[in-house]
Image (cartoon, rainbow, N blue to C red):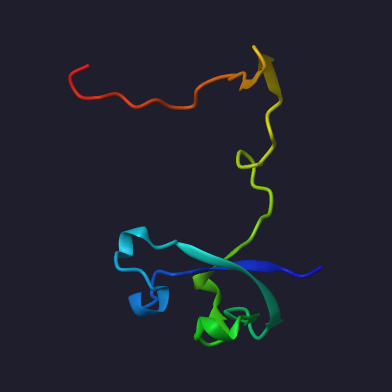
Length: 102
């Protein structure tokens, strides 16, 4: 089984990320396959040529990729037909936004 990891974009130059605003860039990119473990602090990754970074990366800059993270599963909700249109039943609301003064 191949281990997949995400690379932190914290130290990437903005030109490499092709974004005008750092705030809107992704925190991690990937997933990429670990090709070889060089030492306990360094791994070699299979990176696309267009990424233009060195394939040997420090382990502090990567995180393990998990395809199904608890709470982030993409399970389609069953639809309910009301008057010929599809509607969805909400089990509970996770959070809400309140305006100031209300």
